[in-house]
Length: 554
Image (cartoon, rainbow, N blue to C red; front, side, top):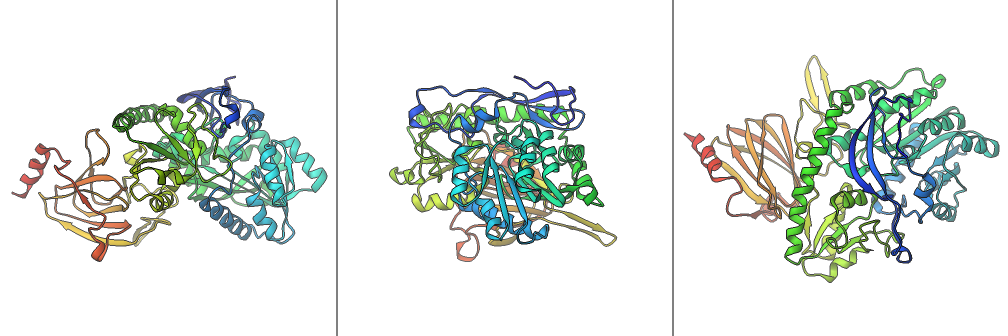
């Protein structure tokens, strides 16, 4: 069934903005016993409400099927990165809401109970709510009392009758799963104790659009949250935003703290600032998504050329990370078990199963040790650096393929484009701008160049570099080391930054006397300066452009 109205405001003034084809449930993984069966598939598309800014899936699917048709495989404790995130979450939230011992905490979408367990350890009374019997059993093994249900207003009333109202309600990566977000929010309001706090975290649509990471779209994600849509939804049920944070999870997530209207004197000033930023960047304009679709289709065509050439040479390609986002990517790109030989994942709940539709077998990372020079395609791009460190220890001869990405997401001018959580501070004395936030930097160098010279024509296998232009203008030429597509070029001017990931051949054409600062993660300083630098011949800069740049010396 297709949605004909907005799930938040009820308007029928909605437009389809993104179409990704036919997809199964992204968090479904197929056991050997069901390989002969066909799982359900539905059109995966998104709509934009032109009245309130709600972004939602076009096709409505049965929520019971999403979590119960197959054993739900995603666990919130499936990696060190995830466990560390939720441990920090429990500590930070407890401090910021002044949570006292014996407070009643309800976690909606409690999954395997890992996060609830952190609050239990702090001496809180904890109750989990999750629709998956499989996950509820795992949570109960941790000592978490769990109700098996899809949360809504009716569920809230049952909890109040049996346990009372909650001092803290947390709902992470689950608010966006509700087929009726308005009823979900009403349930939160009913369940929340006077003076209590509602905290929820989920992927930020703004980052998805800017980076063109369409793989965070799937059937389980019914709604896609912006600050504008969050404010609209919460206000309709009597909740107001106390604070907003941007956190480094799922490639950039919103963490929102909300209270009942009567408990909050003033809404956070960040709300209107971030809404204005969303509007300026075209998040609520239909033409933004026309460009979005054109770009991801072009990236797909170019990437498939590269993949097919590798397979024609007889090479093995292994995907890394059997996440929900991986299934959206694989299905949109039509990469099945005839192209990818395996997908690795650390979760024992997924190993031994197969990806939906594409039927790629899932195994442990140890499979890389069995092959001489396998290609690796990291599908869990949000933790790619950590995964590369692990995989290089298993097989140092792995060749990494880079997922297609929007180059403009790596270029920005520090004085004009300050993405969250970076900030620009202004007063009568001038300006202070954040350049990095929670970024690992191991080496910093200042490089000056005279007009009419060339630099680079090399790549780094493990090093990531960030370049900040402080004077002059240069041309940045780039292409992936394994790509056969034409070299591309962008102009960098004073204040611009660009990130060079591993395995990207890059060359610089200096068209004005120039200075820039290079911030590096990896081997670069002292005796290690050239240890991860691999020169290439001939130059990636076309001959006529090299001649044009060299003539600037005169």
